[in-house]
Length: 343
Picture 1 (cartoon, rainbow, N blue to C red):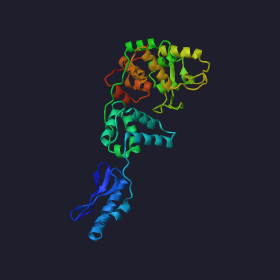
Picture 2 (cartoon, rainbow, N blue to C red):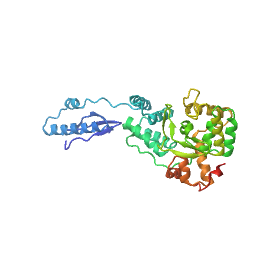
Picture 3 (cartoon, rainbow, N blue to C red):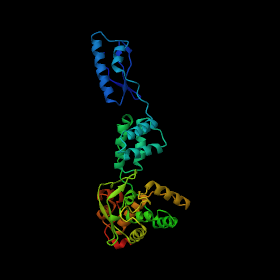
Picture 4 (cartoon, helix red, strand yellow):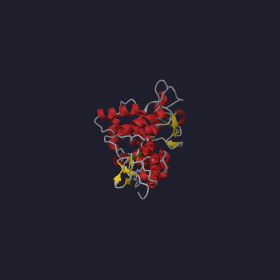
């Protein structure tokens, strides 16, 4: 032995394979992706070398096994990742939106995740559906939960794809199907204002100004029914189209509680986005209309404003995005107009 044996990799196992007088010995240390196991392997390798030089090498390896005492590496599957993520959520239940979203994507993903290659395929799958910034957040959480599979993965760089938008024909068909829809006013405002669905559910009557035709977007409703700051932690003013003004005026005239939320049940509890979404999907399906996300209304409003000539800065202010984000998503659509043109 001319030098300490170097750690080698077998599957995901880290091991030492010293060769003494033509015979190779194998000592399993731990997980290849675990830095502490690498440190341990280097210490044991140096000890093996020193023992050999002194004529004290333990051919039974018992001396070195006592220094390892490491269980076999955990077999990682998609199911074990889900289990670990559920435990992670339970350990800190107050802040878990990202973790719950990752969990939902894992449960829907139809393929196995047993290796770094399959982990990369899952991240690529996320990148095909989500914004790069969201993929980065999800990947950071996956690295925390399952470092062996995700540690070397970088989020794919990709330009934003143009959001899906409704054509005028689509909108006419959808709202014809929604004529008797319980949450029709909510859908109308969503299609007119371009807010995030969760922001509209957190709109208070105190932030509605019918005389001057605008609303103030201050809050967002999270999945637990809690009123929180908007996604960007910014407050913004959104102008009302004639249709939005008409809808809010009717709501104001029929709403007994004009100090709380615009959208709430008879007990003053905020409406749940999941409830509205499920009812919306059922109504579309019953009318033979392909299912489309509520967020599609937001993309439709943004595209319509840009096509009519609003500056990217003005549209970004309406949507609550940065101008850079807006340009990345809607690049190729034009500039400048007044509110009357919306009507």
